[in-house]
Image (cartoon, rainbow, N blue to C red; front, top):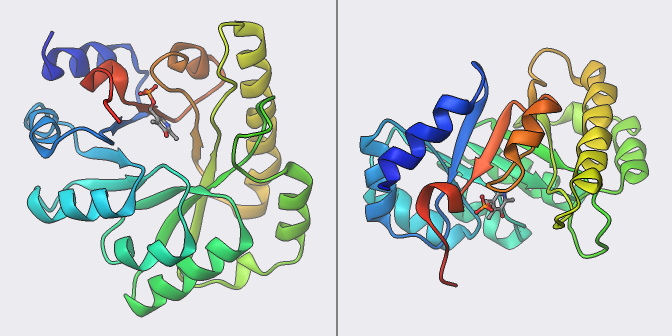
Length: 219
Ligand SMILES: *Cc1c(COP(=O)(O)O)cnc(C)c1O
């Protein structure tokens, strides 16, 4: 199947209002172009240099989504154009996004990445640390960062009950935090190639799908 066919098959399964991030990391610009020509506009990348290089050679109306762990010293590379940073996992990173967005006279949308999976290695905020940080009010005073919601990567396991547990927890955190932020807080980003049908059951509003669209990655 072509990229276009796979893309359209997936889109046909998504309820109205659910956004699809086509995760194009490690795939060439030509593959992105193919998806773009099939109508896709939101693309997810995990490495700043790769994103910046692709952004420079592809159409300007693409929305570039940073989905991987972002080092603070790389924020300035993508700040002028990135549409959303969906892997925000520390206060230091938020401070740097605020600083770089201000320099570019932009407001950058972010998602707070929360750790709910069982694996110790997964990145993201510990829920209690996130609550303490939000209670401090620091984030509310930032004029160039807009919190749009939360994201997580579920446990990497064939045991669906564990994945469901992860999604249930992130959904509860989303519901808990929403009143703190108000109307702009509308994004629950869960679901990847292997688990997105399950994520939809838990109210995902933004799935991030790579392999099922572009095939496997060669790192
Ligand atoms: C790579 C990646 C994806 C896409 O994973 P697939 O299994 O290829 O769909 C989604 N989210 C994040 C954060 C990723 O790093």
